[in-house]
Image (cartoon, rainbow, N blue to C red; front, side):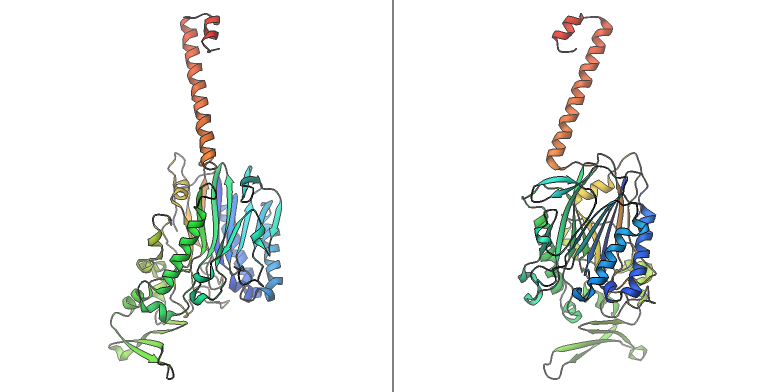
Length: 446
């Protein structure tokens, strides 16, 4: 858990959660999930909260719509959220359109004590004060308060549509403007393909898609502001390097399909010790004999294989990770800490930010401040993904609404400085009685 001091300015809580599992088994999972989520809200008491969901509605959105409605109603009206009297909810429910459906859901909650918060209208290109609770769904493309895109078809592996894209909103709190981007990138379709090269084919696809999103949010259409990008990035450990490290002294057996000669399974055995099986690898199987390696010290020894973000280090920053890999946890209601043996555990769910956003939350001031980057529900089944959160505080006047705001602030400071200088001169001259009142007036000092 990354922690820096404490203060009492505007508290912000950002949460990312792939919630697909919640709608496949709502009776067992949703209650636990919400209870753990509310615990974090209670512990950090944010004034502004953003919850970015991916796979909202589960694998079959149409069949899950009643569960979706129940989940949204619970979040908006629960006793735990009673002090949040304003909210914006954006749900992509356009499941009949392959070209547009992303299954993203973005929730924003504003505490009753928070004054003067504004949301940006991308069509009118101006900020609007946020009042009341509003839900937007279906065709989000026509909603002016956000930008939503599904990645172009040629970005998708084998040019087959899946629910991947992003939603962007812009907010202004205490004169500090920033973008919040809900994102879902492409997964590894096959463990065997991911193992073949370093970096993997899928890593390159994600790199291209994330670059596309960053280009969109810093282009010339709108004023550039700080940004937070959080969601399911599907970042994976470098499979080839991980396997080589975990199975250093193992021998590999290759099993091929009889009809196509395609590799369908790899078996890694210890060279001695009765040739014990260490790892079995298939398209959707990653069965390592000792899961403790992913849990010991929260798996941080494996962070050296978490390389996908490094190519964006000039554009993106992330706080130090000290929580275990967020995926793929067992969906068994009774197994809160067990990983499934489908994929190599990895930190898929992340909260990243621009370097200007980093300065915003880590800015050194006389007052101490607190920043926490952690996961939710460490011992409870939350579905196959553990939600990840970032809690921080913004000092009053920590930022402005872009260049125009900064110019206004500079102008205000110049006026104050000029007034102070004039007052000082007036005081000095009066004390020494050098000029009469009429002379002072003629010099513009009265």
